[in-house]
Length: 389
Image (tube, rainbow, N blue to C red; front, side, top):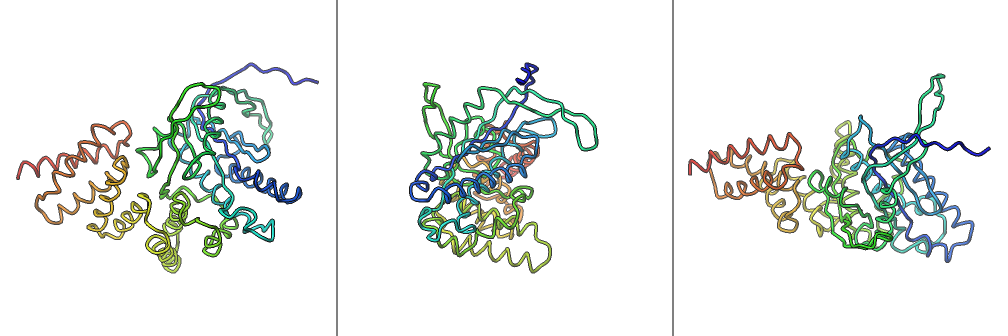
């Protein structure tokens, strides 16, 4: 019997992500059919299980061949920034797993044959409204509820086209739409590179943004992945993949993970272990050739109350990437702290006065209420200092 047509549509907003294994075709050209099939099935299992852990059963999650997709609805209990940021964390977790998964499962004896630079994953992320239908389902306790059955909307097509462009990326191959960029750019510590692309079917040039690197230091992120997945992401395998230490997205992802492990550790021995590993990677193993790496160094100094070095590093970050709002906020707070320690105005007052005005005038809509309040208090203190000069 044909399925009954359901036109009882409802509307919500959602975050959309499409991913694609851009190295699967070269891999299939030399791997036998069984090896290739095993790898694709492992990718599908990895994507589906990780997506369900991140987004729950209510989200629309699936895989087709070497591609995966997830539509994450935003209801009252969630908000735009939380869902978008969680989606970003998910895709970087997934990229790291895919990069190192061959070293865990050893699909071929010669791992270099799988790809001398590891296997790469491209992704497109978009956010917008969507229509959906529901169906009744019976819960385990016998009660009836509804579940989303189908999603329909132009934004699904748009997200897929953003992912298609991401295969030509230079840094992470993770592209986001303008809508996603506007949400993340001032709220999180992320570097973007703007790309002008022609999306298939739109017949016009639009802006998309490739993520270069990101420092994810929120304590509630990057905590979902099971440790068994991470066993393959170790120093030995890092050394085995050509140029992995030159990939900005991976270095900042790995530092984010170690930092969060340190933050969450219980007991002095665990904290000491992760602190040593974090410092070694940050100052010895990974070259500081990316502004986010320098930002992490500054943040490390700030956490250790080394204000002078932290200020110096944050200034270097802003010389390279003046649009990084998080660095400006931290820098203002640090210089104010230093001025209070000296208990007298200095030449730095004019510098932070200009930074504060810029943040208030140009980024007010992007700042949290707490940040606006803090900047307002700092501006009042600066005005008093300047009046005493």
